[in-house]
Image 1: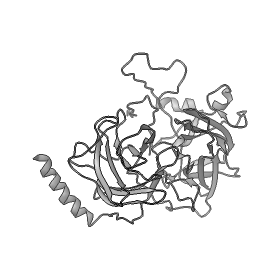
Image 2: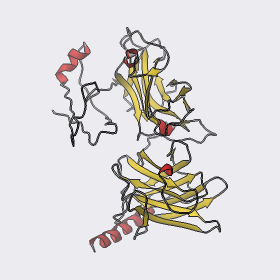
Image 3: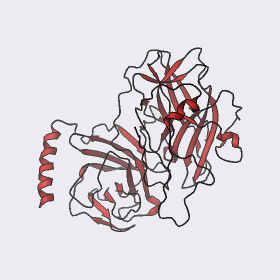
Image 4: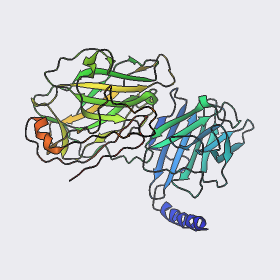
Amino acid sequence: MTCALLFRLLLLMTLAALFQGKRFGPTSRLRYSRFLDPSNVIFLRWDFDLEAEIITFELQVRTAGWVGLGVTNRYTRVGSDLVVGGVLPDGNVYFSDQHLVDEDTLEEDGSQDAELQGLTEDAVYTTMRFSRPFRSCDAHDQDITSDTIRVLAAYGLDDTLKLDRDRTFVKSIFLLQIVHPDDLDIPEDTIIHDLELTDFLIPEDDTTYACTFLPLPIVSKKHHIFKFEPKLLKHNETMVHHILVYACGNASVLPTGISDCYGADPAFSLCSQVIVGWAVGGTHQALPAAKSSSIQQSYQFPDDVGVSIGTPLDPQWIRLEIHYSNFHNVPGVYDSSGIRLYYTAKLRKYDMGVLQLGFFTFPIHFIPPGAESFLSYGLCKTEKFEEMNGVPVPDIQVYGYLLHTHLAGRALQAVQYR
């Protein structure tokens, strides 16, 4: 009864908000997009209305069979929700809101909370467009929240609704990303500089850390980097786990070429101070091939903040690290991903840096065998800043942060003690 009353209240609130918010119809442009599988068979577009709390998806799959999209959790696919649909050979359309009762079996929800906006099939693609609320009273529907969401996508080669593990994929996506306009206070003298690998053959291994050393722009006076964006090749984005740019000391002797960051040659692990970086779940946008061959969405710093380059104390070279996850061991994939920097001679009031907290991995830091859980932690004492930096450090103001773990991580927090 409580749920029914709550549903009616939410429905009234949603209907009122629809007249104020942005409703996406069958032909509305959806701002965000990306591929969901390594072979680029499944392409997802989406957008959302924060006021109405409704999200709209358009799933395009290279198949003549059924297609499905939903949300799962990290530990098991059992209980995942999956909206499925397709077009029968006679032209009739089927569409339903379902969930997984085990790893391979689908069952229709008692409450149908997804609204179909379009379902078509041509000689190449089956395309399904639908909307759903962020939250519903259906226990089988996973919530759409402001966290990174594990999106579940699947398809079949025909209209038989049966999951095949080879055609089922999970992708971590920050669905409710808020994009700030890219044209805010852009200086007229803005210069763009790309840091990227060139035609790197991704190994047929689950995990690869590829590193190379590249020069920063040569400038005769101080400049500020005020914006950056990831450059991910459109057909390789599902293999890129993170991209990091590290500052190198100007007295460093650096190797050439591309090699394993943490392999036989320790020189490729030189330079450890992060300048900028991107990781899975971070903001980026797939652009149509006619407009761009890369995938990018910028991170713009506050109007009074920039990363300094061009002074004797600033780095002249960087280490570019790209972590590839080729879990399907796909052969013959070449990549030229990287980071694009925007910089200007119009200086901001404050210099920006990155403070790295936590643990650097090293050979004797490991999770004890048989442990159900294990806590790693690091402490950073601010009174040591001057000793570490070599010169007095003025007051530091934190304006943003990023938490990041790999597959063994279950929870993470950063705490400031005053």
